[in-house]
Image (cartoon, rainbow, N blue to C red; front, side, top):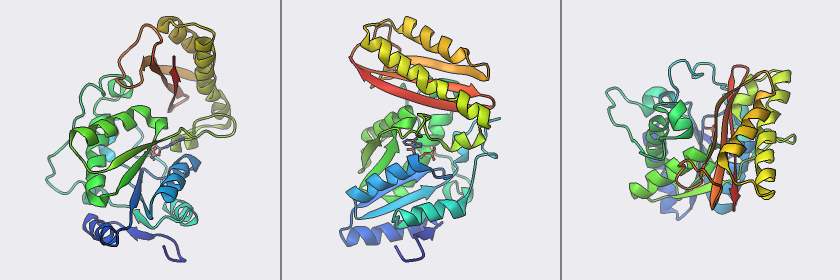
Length: 286
Ligand code: AMP
């Protein structure tokens, strides 16, 4: 890094050359892929990457192929100057910010499908989403060729999908899961929180309340998934601005539905608060 901040690269070939030079110097590379509008959740991944590697690369790319028709691709918050400032203050070495044509050159016709793990949760309610995610992550990993790549458990299914793709395709990178980072009041940090009005921001706290309720009830001995999902849904529906996309209780490794809480269990929520779709989750071990 220079005093003026991280080096900004937009060409895949140039990025490949930059990190090839780093590897030749035996520097380890930590990579944090993002869609920008960086917040403290993203920066918690960057800080971890900083402590575990000699160099840190952050990518900023709002990937069109992971948005469905009618979703918020055009409205997605973009603030390059603020993002670069945050990267500079955390000692990021390189920021990779390609354009759409750089990542999807004319005539591209290759995609990656991770099966089964994408049948449930966001895979079910956002058809094609994980094809877009897996495809762009594979491209990014081939461009940056990091030693480690950092993914937040905020997007728990995304982390599992990427981990499985890397295993199945023998991609030489370590996928590092990072804890979900919350705001002081408990709301899971997300670039989409920018869309919320002041009232919706308060209403959105019901997601965390529902997950806290789930944990408490499991600790009390309630092990019926149907009962627990019903109670979470009731709590969420008590807030008029919300509309549930899904409330799910699944095996935390396979993401298959469970009827009884047993082993490592993921409770995952996707809820519209006003016009904003928010996700949140927690894992319990019984
Ligand atoms: P995004 O820019 O939303 O695609 O996120 C980029 C990366 O940051 C993904 O691995 C996310 O899971 C992670 N991330 C986003 N928000 C959080 C959060 N609140 N806590 C932990 N990781 C997060």
